[in-house]
Image (tube, rainbow, N blue to C red):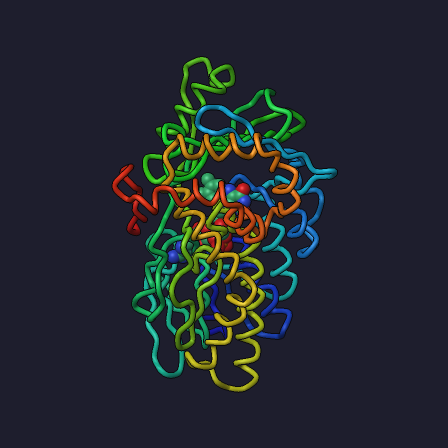
Amino acid sequence: MKTSYDILVVGAGPAGTTAAERLSANGFEVAVLEEHAIIGEPVDCTGVVGSEALEEFNLPRGLVVGWVNAVSIHSPAGIPVSYRGESPFAYIVDRAELDRTLAARARDAGATFLLSTQAADVTRDARRVEVFCRCPGGETRRLTAKVLILAGGPRFAFHKGLGLGTSSVLWRSAHAELPGDGLSHAHVFLGRDVAPGAFGWAVPVMRHGNPHLRLGVNSHSDAPRYLRKLCEEKFAHLLPGDGSLPCRSWVVPVLPVSRTYGDRVLAVGDAAGQVKPTSGGGIYYGMLSARDAADTVSEAFRRGKLTRDALAAYEKRWRARLGFDLKVGTLFRRLFARMADRDVDDLFRIIHADGLLARITERVSFDWHKELILSLLKHPKLARILMRRCLDWRAEPAFSDLPTL
Ligand SMILES: Cc1cc2nc3c(=O)[nH]c(=O)nc-3n(C[C@H](O)[C@H](O)[C@H](O)COP(=O)(O)OP(=O)(O)OC[C@H]3O[C@@H](n4cnc5c(N)ncnc54)[C@H](O)[C@@H]3O)c2cc1C
């Protein structure tokens, strides 16, 4: 059995498979390690991607199970701000099928997939990287490669040992899918009783020809409890008769890791914190950055230099693409986390009273948020509300950024 590759990729999520496809197409021997037996499962994602992502990566329309052409955002007091696009600006995909589609592309390009194979330990010397793997039935394997790409999602087990940073802010996240109709478009719910520090959501999708709702909560703590509360308060009619709520919980890294490259190693996707800090969406940013990673590694191989300095170009590339949006988004996330409910209500009232909605929505882009945020901050009344708790730290207990798990 083959044990040596040019590149090993840990994780068969969208970031890992995108990198694997491009590297294999460039002629490298690539193996992707995935700890689960089935790619794409279990699913910890709502699957919302912007239309730009669908186009950019030529994703098949067959993956789409719902679309977003309107969204209503509800303030803590229930004041709605609604936006309707002329056409869908985002789509909801079958996330498991998305992962399998991307994996199939990588396999077609020549990548090997080693399923039920968990990277358990990594060592590195001047010539190679060695990965110690756990396989089913207590079996173990040692694989070596010239380069390792960490794409294992928001787990940072190997980062520090390899000289990479980790994401120091993780939202807690819980999600569920309930059968039944109820909503015509996407809804977002705000408030400290709803989702402290972040937001809850509900989007309609079709599953096997039947309407369902995908619901979720990102928050600073105890997301499953807030999700249950959201369901009971707003969607009780959709809960099963016994009142149970089958939900899953996970985390979202909403701060990029401080360094995403080292000697013979790169991190991509959630493993690099390449996630929109405002929404927690990471599919598109992870895939874009995975392409940057693949291009940098390909060039480094051509030059015969796989050192930290040679791979530093990766971080320059992805930060040039995403960095400004991530910085402005992080600023907004921090301001928002400090706002009291009545600040958010005031913000919504001013948007209505001053007729700002049309001006704000001109700036809406599903994937790129800096223009919208900067336009809010440029408006004196809105900026005053957004900054209120920063100017008087003692006025309200503030959420501080959370440490990693
Ligand atoms: C509840 C929830 C809802 C979300 N909704 C959206 C959304 O609507 N839109 C959006 O854009 N983003 C959303 N996200 C974020 C999105 O899911 C992630 O940003 C995205 O999955 C990151 O992709 P990735 O390839 O970096 O990592 P992942 O998708 O996490 O893939 C990592 C893979 O690595 C495997 N793995 C991990 N460790 C090892 C190991 N040691 N050995 C072998 N395999 C390993 C895992 O099994 C997994 O398959 C959501 C997140 C959550 C939690």
